[in-house]
Length: 159
Image (cartoon, rainbow, N blue to C red):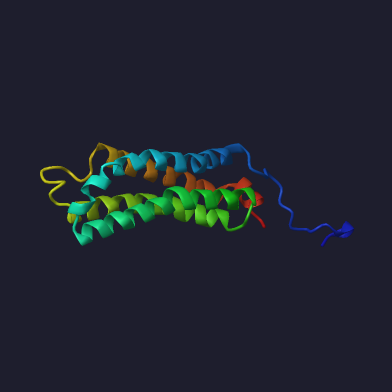
């Protein structure tokens, strides 16, 4: 403590949910909307369900659960952490960013292994999958270093 009773460890620099930190916030708001758009891929599932093997059906259920976590639960939880300015936000945000490309790649590879007839003669990494992987890698490459080095992040998430 310094004279006057104010803590001596107050940091100078930008503080609060502003500046470049608004872009990750917008991304977290957009993730559930993007997830809703992705549910269109499962629209034909109802008709195909009776013809799926147990392994295929299990894969679909696990994929739906992981997508719900990655695209709905995690972003909403991260937004809660962000608006509460909790100290755990930066770490969990970086984990979420790093997990996204890994999950997309694993999903595509497992999908090809479990549904070989669906991918016969086709590359598992189609244009949409490559775009999703690229987008998630670029996001991680930009926002993980920003989160680690930003004075605003260090000064904002202190609770």
